Image 1 (cartoon, rainbow, N blue to C red):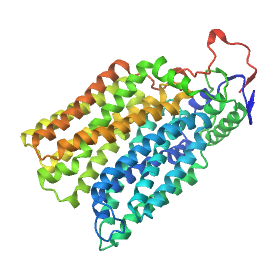
Image 2 (image 1 turned 120 degrees about the vertical axis):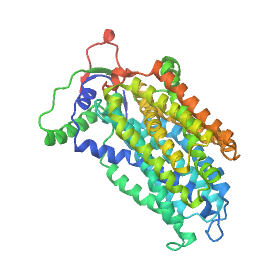
Image 3 (image 1 turned 90 degrees about the vertical axis):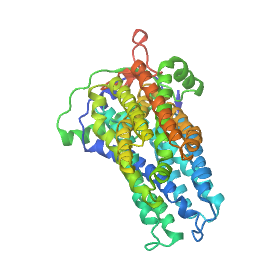
Image 4 (image 1 turned 60 degrees about the vertical axis):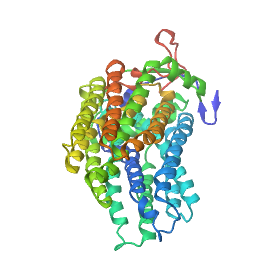
Length: 493
């Protein structure tokens, strides 16, 4: 059967093993830069908008909008765009391929961000905040799929964690950039905030140029009947790595695939929610736990600092930069342990430890034992572990489901976590952290800590030992031919 240039049949291939046995090389750094650095843009985007809300609402900003509309309606539309984008692009990524979609979603993000900078009416700003989120939501599915399928199994955990954690480098940059953008001695009120969005576009264009050199996932090509193209891609990668590293080790293991041009949505849903029910529960738990812990801290951090410690509103960006650094260094320093000590012990321990530390922070805060500086230090320590755990949630759902469902699974759990974190989380924590009562803020911390600990316990029971294992061993592709049913292949790769 053929679909365009696609010719499906039964094929036996060593392509997954050939990718997994590669040593780390400059080519892999190209993948990390081309695909992973977009999270820096996401962190910059989200942080800048939150920090410039007060400036946008001032007379002379060039936009008739209130601060509440920026942090409320616009933020909700960004979340709604990210959730819907993840689901729509995720399905298309599994159907049409990783490369086509990670180029399209970045183009959507760049276009929407550029048009946000040109906002002249509130409705325009709202529309393009939604479309910016729509593009970013699709990035999560397409990028995490491609990274997991291109990075060797030995390094997959640490690379995935660091890439997802790089969001917080963007958050640091956004905090610092907003301080400059809000300085009217440097930039007029109606120019500074527009330039912050324009800078995001410039950085995104650089990433787009690098991304053009990232190939389609050979695993996706193989399963969708394009095994000759998959062979060309893998051979080209091997030549580049061999030129730098010398002779390559022999690959071990072959897989027989009965290729299909597409997989129905019903098959995807049944696979994730019925056949892999325990792994679905694990994904739900990890995403919801980290969403509530993060909202318990980051959603009300500015209000807590200003209400309880009299920190000037203009100075909260410096405190946020400190906790953002803690978030980034967690995955950076702990990531290797997810590949060496293993997924189960590291996922469960980072969730449990961050939850217990937040309980301790709540106790100290309730006693009045903390200052603005020491509270920020406590938050940074909590989020050092929580960020590694939260990043491992994305890693988990991207590697524990079959190849044909990968992007959709990432999209589904991302949309769930984003919806919980961006809708119910703020509704709950806004009421608790804005009252000015110590007991309410303590309760907010305790709710986030409890759900994080609960997710840690679920991980201790259900986490999959995926460290250093091929994706096909963790979750057998739906198109793979069982060993006992194998027949002589029609072709090989």
